[in-house]
Length: 317
Image (cartoon, rainbow, N blue to C red; front, top):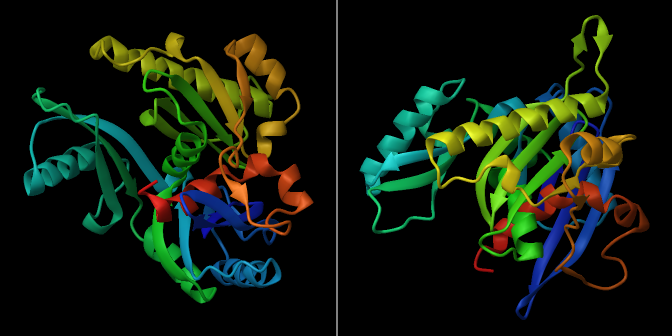
């Protein structure tokens, strides 16, 4: 089961294998206790654990092993270009560089990485690195255990989002897509070439004022997107083989704020990119008529992180 614990809603998806296909056993969405999570911070763990326990019982989510997501300021994501190495030497090099760049202390148990596009004829390798703030992974483990489930793994929101996109859309290796997941208090932006993340950022949507005027939600989203595009272009200036923001072919939106008033108009007029909604069930079937309620159908745009987390149990696919 993939469990996406947001500040306003809780999303759960159970996946199972039928032959060579994946099907949804159950999927559900429910409100979170008011004030239990604020700006990504876990303020009332007992209330959240009780909510998860009731949610799984009431929605008949029976999967005992749970993959859970971590995002916002609790996570640091970066892509490194390093001199070729293997084994312990590579891990030490990745950890040293991550410790230099991360805004918090990086502990051995709270970071992981994966080598991307490892061309054997190059002296360099690219690595995608994810690190969590000290104590955050352990707190999630305790939360899931209190709810009567087994914590199988903790993954970043960004990686889960890419998993859901890559499995459902089977992109061509040269396709460059922007994934934009909009939560109640934060947004996740992933630029993906094929199924490989080029850039991933977790950004706050906290209220902002300029000249004593409060920015609208769409203004905050636009400014964050423009900063990500500027960062893409800075990386491409240093590494000409990396894509530029002008090469992004379209945006796929998801999350509770993906239906925010004025978002489509802003994307058309200010960002000027084609856009559509990410369907996390595009290639995934349903097991009988009870697999998906009308509430989940109406809020399918909120479910890709939960789907991407559940997919971690089927990595051979």
